[in-house]
Length: 88
Image (cartoon, rainbow, N blue to C red; front, side, top):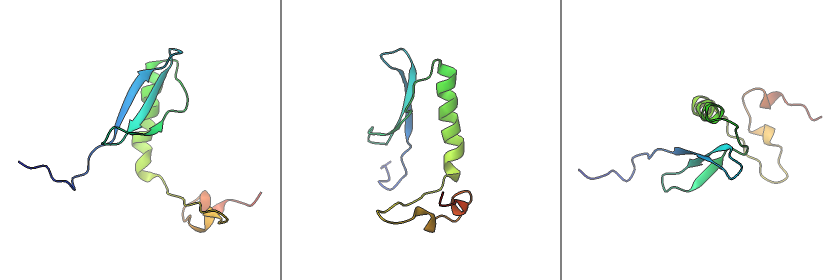
């Protein structure tokens, strides 16, 4: 059975302890490159895995905003709260 080169490969989360002993995560592409990281350390494993679960649950509904230089990104947004942002 041949692998379909167009078959979508899953992203993976790697969970690890940093040098300070805090839990962190990386989101890795199918070629194992880091494409996102936790940005903060978590004191316990449960908090770190909870953050991963939130991302997994909420990312399907995430909006994509484009921000070219000298362009107001709100012109692309169609969903609140982005479409309703004020200039202040």
